[in-house]
Amino acid sequence: DVKVTQSSRYLVKRTGEKVFLECVQDMDHENMFWYRQDPGLGLRLIYFSYDVKMKEKGDIPEGYSVSREKKERFSLILESASTNQTSMYLCASSSGGPHETQYFGPGTRLLVL
Amino acid sequence: RKEVEQDPGPFNVPEGATVAFNCTYSNSASQSFFWYRQDCRKEPKLLMSVYSSGNEDGRFTAQLNRASQYISLLIRDSKLSDSATYLCVVNKDRYGGATNKLIFGTGTLLAVQP
Image (cartoon, rainbow over all chains, first blue to last red; front, top):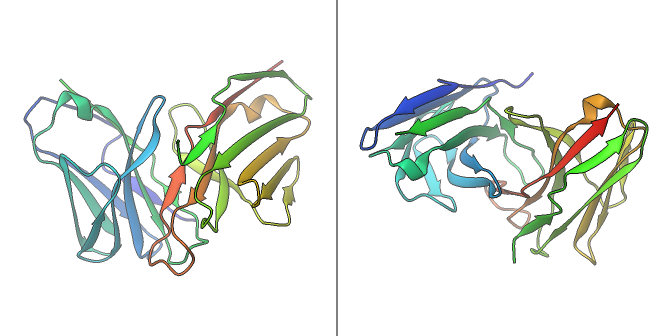
């Protein structure tokens, strides 16, 4: 069974703080993704990585960065948190190939005050 | 125009009813199609892939019409436990891309009533 875990289920931070969200998968998947999900907007891709130390911008990368030092771990960094980054953050992983589905972690609900 | 469009609902149906969800997508190069299910405050989970010939999994039937760029999901004999948001998902890249980027619809909310 694929398992994707995220470091926190709920997080409360203040504006301007640096925030780290961690994601770990145990299926040796090449690809990992970070999304945010907001009501009425659905899931939007922030960044993804197709290999260790490789990353590509998704649709909404502004205000975020990522790190992938090990294959199983993909971190999302909010350099200076802002209130408009209050959201549900979902990490996903998949093996290679265009027909492969993505498996999601439980999500982190981030509130920026 | 959104890349993947769904009727947001909610669809309120009685137990035992048959309900159908529709979805349209804009990228004619898309090769992979899925339906995901998302329970309230939980992560999305794969319900089923959608194949060109149509496919069935128990009470669930998915169909794809490439010419019309249209995907459907039919749920027969609805159960209370089917209550969830159903996400239509389409891949973004043509076959051969290094990474399977997916585009998610905003979802259709189904509420099955006793």
